[in-house]
Amino acid sequence: MKKKGFKLPTAYSILLIITILIAIITQFIPGVNSAKFSDIVMAPINGLKDAIDISLYVLLMGGFLGIVTKTGALDAGIGAVVKKLNGKELLLIPILMFIFSLGGTSYGMAEETLAFYALVTATMMAAGFDSLTAVATIILGAGSGVLGSTVNPFLVSTSIDSLKGVGIVANQAIVIGIGVILWLSSLFISIFFVMNYAKKVKNDKNASILSTKEYKNAKEAFMDSNKETIEFTTKRKIVICLFIISFIVMILGVIPWERFGISIFKETLFLTGESFGNWWFSELAAWFTLMAIIIGIVYGFNEKEIVTAIIEGASEMVGVALIIGISRGISFIMSSTNLDIYVLNRASTTLTGMSPILFTNIAFLIYIGLSFLIPSTSGLASLSVPIFGPLAKTLGFAPEIVISILSAGSGLVNLITPTSGVIMGGLAISKVEYTTWIKFGTKIVVCIYISLAIILSIAIMIIK
Image (cartoon, rainbow, N blue to C red; front, top):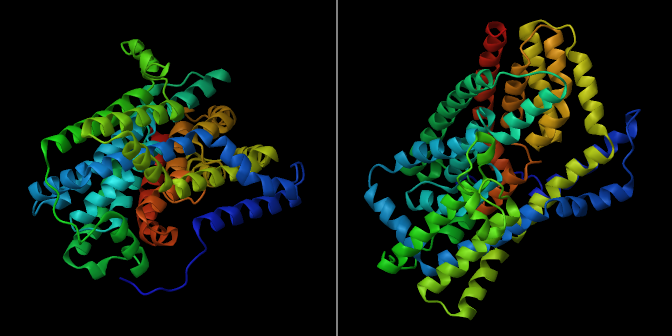
């Protein structure tokens, strides 16, 4: 472990500083509503209001994990998996990263990954790796899929609908084709770096770039060297089955089946009042609370034990919920001052009259900047594609390339940006500081950036 050196402020302070800086910038830009002091004060509160659904989901997910943890099923199950993988623990990394990437490319899996950080971190540490390995597996796995979105409705469908709104019919086959290449190339790069790091840590714990404090916090949270090996009893196996079913239903619930012409899930209304495909954070929160109660009853806990476990589990997620809400405050400042629209219009003017390769790379950089300021991919798609799509067509370029550039740019930024509640929340769960993630992830992001820039440059030259 490295000795303590210079440390940036906490995640909360970083987000508040960014909010203040953006508010200051609005004072010097003509045509933008200047942010008032009251806007700065209220930004975190308005952000929390806007994120109340996901914050509740995170809290109640914590309650669900609290119940499952209390049964000992997770510890026993993880122990059984690690035992079976004896000598082959590294296989966990590519398998999990590929699974997370499938979620990313198909339905934009991002906030949903928050449910997996505690489990994956505990598994990785039991396998001899560190908490940073777990964070990298989830963020880079799901992130590689998102930046190479193929049928992700929140990005692809929203972008195609936005183009349709300005009279442009996009060829989704082109978007899917480019998306697959962006997705797999980024995934291979990520797997290479994560496996290389994990192998070093497994062979020598001093190879970990975590600080002593980080490693200690993660060990206290996810490993208990004093407890005995927990037996994987029949009752605990049933709990694990219910645990897995809970996440399968979560995935079925959020994939927009009707957009793909699938209507077989209409009979699932009885669960939450919304059928599979129409679930979002409110429904997910209710579902995991229901499953927490069922698991508690199946395991034999009494009413007081169930309630106590849920409350204790939720309390562990309070900091995560606050971080997610505060990060939304930045978007509040951007939209309330119209700074987002100003930036989009200036960016559109900059791109006019450029050659194909220059257009691609400048647009890529612009989307990277925009994604830092507007972390929501669906929001950015709705705002920007109706502007950049027609511009690309006017210049003689395939408008579909704009969707791919948006996907690559926003996906790349959301691997490291502090304005992402998912990044900051996931790091908080796994006890990894943001500065450590930046130290680890920067070279990977640079390599992915170069790969994406080359792929997009070739694509705009080939596709007409």
